[in-house]
Structure formats: C-alpha cells, structure tokens
Image (cartoon, rainbow, N blue to C red; front, side, top):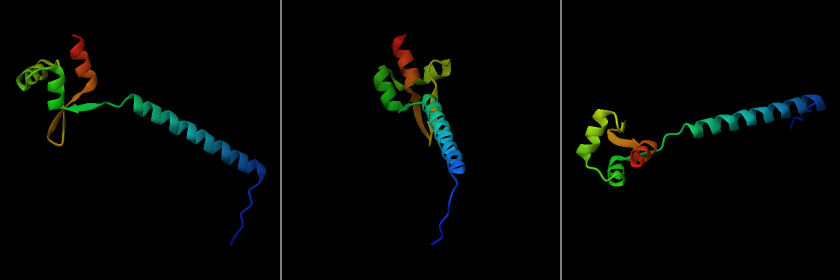
Length: 87
C-alpha cells in the first residue's frame, strides 16, 4: 500500500476547488430546474380544458395551444393549459 502525503496549502486549495465546483453544479441545477417544461398527455389536457380533440386541433392551427410530439404521442405544456384556463 502506498501512502500519499499532501501539503496543507495544496489540500486547502484542492478543497476550495471542490467547494467552488459544488457551487457551480448547484447553480446549473437551479437553472435547469427553472427551464423545465412540464407536459401532460393530450387526453388529460382535453379533460382539464373541457374541449374536444377537434377544438384542440383548431387551437393549434390558430396558435392558441401548441402541441409537442414525443414518440408519436401528443402532449401539451401545463403552462399553456393554465394560460387557456385563465382566459
């Protein structure tokens, strides 16, 4: 077994670097969380809004409610649904 000795000054510099890195990672996580878009499946969105699929398609064509396609399925942004409910 090999023993590695680190001088006090070098260790403190290393430790400060780790703390700075941790702070940056936490800042990045906060930014990513703030930009997160929450989506709901189409059937749930239609139910919440109380509209038909045809109405949702018309709203999409008019730019009122935007569809998001993931794996061939349709989703809607929770923020957009909330905005439509306020109108």
